[in-house]
Length: 183
Picture (cartoon, helix red, strand yellow):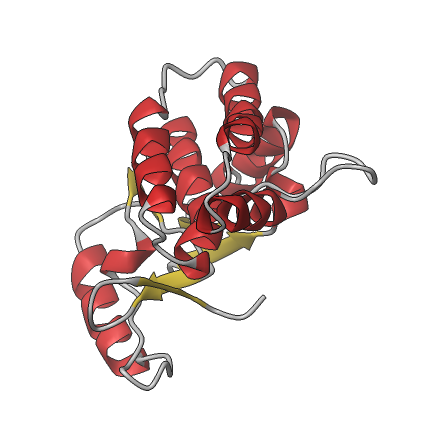
């Protein structure tokens, strides 16, 4: 049996939570495919990364400086990476995000980066293959989820993989742009 396990934001908000999730995943070999959310709140007064990304993108879209806000998001991921003692840099990913925010890539793109980045961290931590959801989850021109195409592509992509991490919350439109599911 193959199992897909989904973890929400609060269960992936810190390195300590990542360690708990890893224990859960590795405690049963049938848990082969992992769907992570973006980091949620670490404490009641905290802000979810998705909300931070929305606020950061709103500044970019308004032509305002968003460097400070993007740095705060980056620090959240660096805290997790350092806490897990991973040899992983997201420098290239953040450079692409900054460029795409400046190019007004859209709120769906902005929001999806939380899951995308957490997927990279989780895959690195588990030693699993990372698969960008935009490559295997599809929407129709109408905006409706394309279950048939998604199932076909996903099945083909996963058939020879022992394990994989595929971020949740987003996929791609027919033109290749990012589309999120509703929160």
